[in-house]
Image (tube, rainbow, N blue to C red; front, side, top):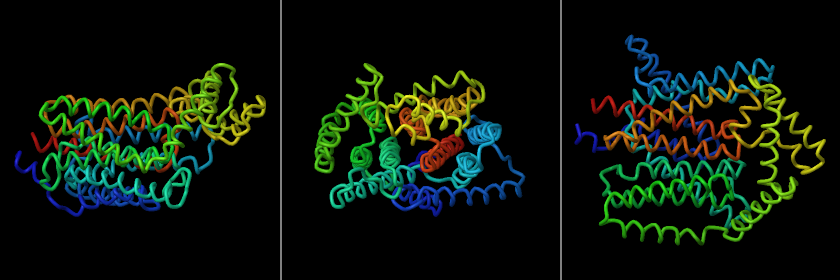
Length: 417
């Protein structure tokens, strides 16, 4: 069994997985196309199970994660219906309804997990090249690829690179472990470079957490390889320096720091990034007690923001912002405690599944669990400064990756049993 697990078998569905992840940020609508392909394959797998009268759900918690994602979508949609929100707002929940189909496509297709590591590596490296081209040759201040948002572009490139790094000790195609380790680190660093070039501050905390996590792990693995790993990381970071707009990054950090200090000192909004977010978070926590259980609805929150901007006469751009720029505060104000609870349940259940795998003594399960925890950590950290799941590219990639990792974890459990 171990010999078979060490060999990476080529398959059409595995190659599709790799290409889908590689193209997610590199082609217009690439993330939607990849998800759609696996949804169609999921329908086929579902039909096959129905014909064979096979069980439609798996008995483990990992197998029930798709149902929890569907539950999040249904409860959230019902709250939106309660607030009589327009039909366009329900688009947010569609990827979560697709979750069981993506899960079935990966599980029954028996995708080799290493296609995921490769796809995420390419999915981070190619956007970095696009960002370097836009920044260096075109002169774009904040590259955004085809997403028209530097925040989504930088954050997701970093997320894909981090998932590739989670699989750094699981080499594909019989590569030497040292070669694949170097490639995985390079993929992460390229994703981090794309994040830095896009000037998306929300990803920088996540990058720091990932670097601390994996370096501590790798430095503890083998004393003999310590110096090689450190030298490689230093050289790789040095090679990225010419690509990075250092002056703009430092200026952005300095401006944000001044804005935050001034807001806490005087309550005034003197810059356009951090201080408005602090003002919005305060507003969200202020209006939540007015409707604690079902919230104000999305349009209600937007109306409160505009009302706040009109009454305060402060930062003029506040009126044009339609959300509170924090996932949990937005859910609390928009959908109340009910919306926040189902969101927390979705995250906590996924986190429990991936943590148990990461804490296990099985090497492959540990790697897959680590990848799942990376995805959850990234989406949670990004949600600290933005309404992460409200935006299409974020929720599509989030659902696709979590369902893929959960299915691979269950598949590995079946293989090793």
